[in-house]
Structures are given as structure tokens and as C-alpha cells.
Amino acid sequence: MQLFYTVQSGDTLISISRRWEIPLNSLTASNNLTPPYTIYPGQQLSMPPGINTYSVQPGDSIFSISQKYRISANAIINANGIKPPYIITPNQILTIPSGVPYYVVKPGDTLFGIARRYNVTFKGQPRPDYIIQSNPGITQNIIPGMQLYIPYPPPGGPGKIAYITSFDDVSSFFFGLYNPDTGRTNVFTSQTIDKPSFINIFWSPDSTRIAYADNKGIISVFNVVTESIQKIDQTSDPIPSMDWNSSGNKLVYSTGEEIRIYDIISFKFSSIKRSGSSYPQFMPNGKELLYVREDSSGIRQIFTSTLDGSNEKQITNMESNSISNVRLSPDGRLVLYTWPGASISMIYTIELTSGKTYDIPGWLEGKNYNPVWSPDSTRIAYSATHYSNGKYYSLIRVTGPKGEGDSTLAVSDCFSTPVTWSPDSRKIAYLSGCGDFDTPYKQMWSIDTTKPAPLNMLYNTNLYTLEWSPA
Image 1 (cartoon, rainbow, N blue to C red):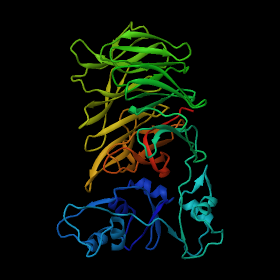
Image 2 (cartoon, rainbow, N blue to C red; image 1 turned 120 degrees about the horizontal axis):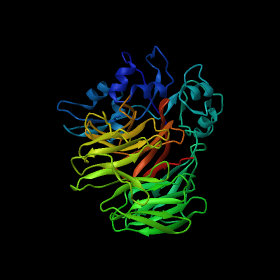
Image 3 (cartoon, rainbow, N blue to C red; image 1 turned 45 degrees about the vertical axis):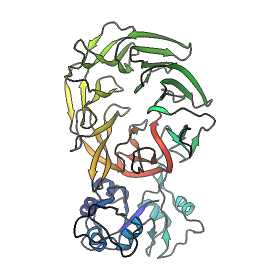
Image 4 (cartoon, one colour; image 1 turned 120 degrees about the vertical axis):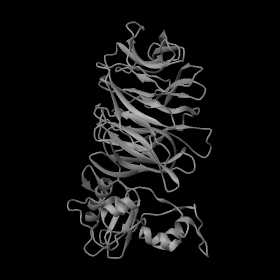
């Protein structure tokens, strides 16, 4: 359910967004505010997720912190389970709620108007019936003072979002599918999968199959139509990346010693020797590969070659071995990668024709992870780690292929999160809801880049990865 903050005298949208480190565009979009963005005391604002922790400083009291955030002391006490005499200590990390989980009906309100104001819409149309479903017993005749739970609607749009989930027994994992058009999920409990290695899944172009590798190096293909799993190979090294050809009948991956192209129809594969190879991908023409391997000096570089390994060309001139997250743009013009490592991770793109490299600005702390291309090759989404008020968060960011317009759209309360694009290159899905460790995540969110109001899709569900289908 959405959270609502009551505007206080002296508040501005900028001061509220800074208080919880919420992207300003996200705050205005969540409330359908337009220029000149006027707000007034007593107005209730739907609050997107932000930075909701506070590290207690010497001299702080619950009352002084409540004054700082302009919320009630009881809200802080209840959110943190603080007992009388309400003592807090320096460096204690408190949860600071940005609002209450209900909207208070005002004179003149209608369910239709509330739905329109707070984005309870589907395909552009307000859906007051969603509000009625979330508040059993109410009718269209609402009265001032009534407290209403305001749900998030399904995001809508093409494709389905695959995820890996578990129940109480975390030794058993299952595929799940979320339908953005209905908000419904389907968990394939008929097929148990071994713990996935690297928690990566790869959709076939026709969205009927998902390739993945488990922690034993077994590569499998899950058919979402027949709900069957086909085990195709086993390697001794972990598999961080795989790729389908455009026809969806071949899968390319690396065993560490060689790159294999497996035909899922004939059950046969061809291979080329490439010691230390990783991130193999088909070029759009289907006749060439892109991959990473060591050069003559032992430094990992990006190369291209034909499918049989001939006509190999070196693309990069790296000075260290830390190149990671290599991804070819869907149009085959640029490659993105991260460098130099995990503690500091910057994103770069390189043009295949000219070899020109571009530095993506990224977030201030230099921890930029999980970059992915939009299907139309015009943007990159990624997760940038940000430490604030005693906790790590992830900023969901978007940039152009050469670093243009690099900006934050939303906030996840995890150290890092995978991100994935909708087939129309309009929406981004990501994970949140972390405890002390990143996995399992507990929430799935989406955000429309044209109107960045975050929508919650799944809640209180064990989640380990997600990937939006191509169609």
C-alpha cells in the first residue's frame, strides 16, 4: 500500500524530497503535481521509497528527530518498537517512516479523483475499483475522515517478468512469472531447480524458454509453456552469462576453456578454444560472436570473431584483468562493461567500429553495478550503491549510451539490485525489501521512465533475481 505524508507549514517539495532523499521527479510524478508545484499544509502526499533510516547523533532525542523529519514521535516509536522510557543512543540506526499507510478522505473527495491523483490507474484510466478491493466493505459513497488503503496498480505493458523464488525451505527454488497486465503471478512448483549460480536467467527471443545455470555448473533450459526442464550441459566453472541467437534455437556460453554453441533442437554443439573466456554473445547478424578472453599478455580483453573462431579482432586495450558485466547493445554498435572491480565499479561503453570509449559518470561513491541495455539500445539502466544514514541503498539510475542524462529514478533499500527493461524500453523493474543481507529480496518494483512514480508489484516474497521477457 502507498504511504502518505501530511504536509507541514514551511514544507516544500524540495525539502521533503531531500529529507528522505527521494528523487524530486519521482515525488511529483507519484502525486501528479504540475508546475508551479504548489503544496499546502494538511495536503497528503504519496511518498515513493527513499532513505528511511537515521543514525542517532549525540544529543538527539526521539522528539528532536521527529521535529527534524516533521513526523510524530509516536511514528518513530512504533516503527522501531521503542519501549519506555524511550532511550536512544548515538550510532543507533532508526527507521524513519515517511508516512502512514492510509489516506484520510477530505471533503469533496471521490474514489475516482483519489485514484487519478495517486496513479491508481491502468492503461491511463483511473481504477477506483482497485481501491474498493483494498478496502472491503466500502462503497463509492466515501465520507470525510475515512481512512483508505491506496494500492499500487499493475504497471501494465508487454511481456512477463520471470523471477526465482523460494518458500520456507530455501533449498528448493522455483521459477515464477509476473504478468504486468493483470498483476497475477504463476509459480512453477512442479519443477524444483537447484540453487542458481550467479542468480542469472536468460530469456529466449520468443519468450518461451529460460536458460540458467545452477551452482553445480549444470546448464538448463526451462520451457515456460510445457513447464519442463531440459539439462543440456555441465561445466566446471561458474556461468555468469549466456546468450540466445535471434532465432532462439542456439545458446552460446563458455566452459572457461572453450566457447560452446549449443543447438537445443538437434542437441549438438560446436565449440572454439578460448581459454579463460567469458560473456560470449551473438552479434545481431548471427554470424559473429563477442566475448572476453586473455590477450597475449594475460590481460582480459573484449574480442569479436566468426562462429568458428576465425577473423578474431581485439576491441579493448585494458591494462588490468578486472573487466566485468560485458554486454553488447541490441543494435550491435556498442559494448558496455564495468571496471576495475567490486569495491569501485565504473561503467564504460565502447564503439565497435571506432574503438572510442565513453565514461558513464555514475554515482559519487563509484559503486555502479548490473548495467543493462534497453531493448532499443538508447539507454542503460543500472544500480548504484549509496551509503546514507547507517545503511546501504541502491539508486536506480538511467543514462544514455555515452553518459548523457545520467540520473536517479528510484531508490531500493538494498546494497545492489538487478535491473531489467520492459520490451518497449519504457519501464524498469528492480528488487528491494532487504534485511541485513541483500538476498533474498522481498519486494519487486517497476518504474516508468516517462512518469517515474514507482509501483510495487510483489511484496513479502522471497526473490533472487528478475528478468523481463523480450515479448
